[in-house]
Image (cartoon, rainbow, N blue to C red; front, side, top):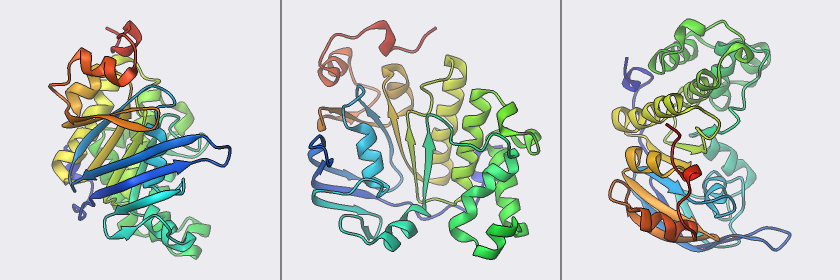
Length: 267
């Protein structure tokens, strides 16, 4: 079943960065004068080597890293300068998918996915684990949409890496997010599984219209699954254009070096 079965389609958010710089307390510049306009419903691959600024970009959009200068708007929210309470509300509508899955290994698949409802659930229900039937139905549909529903009561630690990442995607979907941000979601997966996870993310974008940003370093996946590609190096945007037509020369410009076998998906 397609991702359209996971939930009613939310209103997707746009993302606008205007001359954004992020400087960490130790003086390291994570983003340097970055200006981007990402329309709602976009499917964007962000590529770059480690330290290029692509993880900082996602963490800044999610309000986890503060903007040093410039302005950042996510949907109708002004993220730069937002209060802690405002940022907490913002994150409730942003689904995050991490390289390391961030699942509770001893908890069941269902319990992990229901974590996606925390921002939308009363404190007493959260403390007691008394999620509503509508929340449970959201979780079931999200798990079905990524093909993991039969593992509903299995411990997360019993699953393969690809299955765990699909659980993480289902958790993000259960939030009914306006944006999904995925930070190197396939870096630790074998090629067939990586394609499966990327296909899930593309289907979420296509079927639900949710804005999806995916950090990648493999050029094959960026070309195949991204519609737009943003290339980053040393905290700056050095490429912004169609993903499918990006050449090896474009990737070499982004990476600042020649393409190596490690930059391509293993056969």
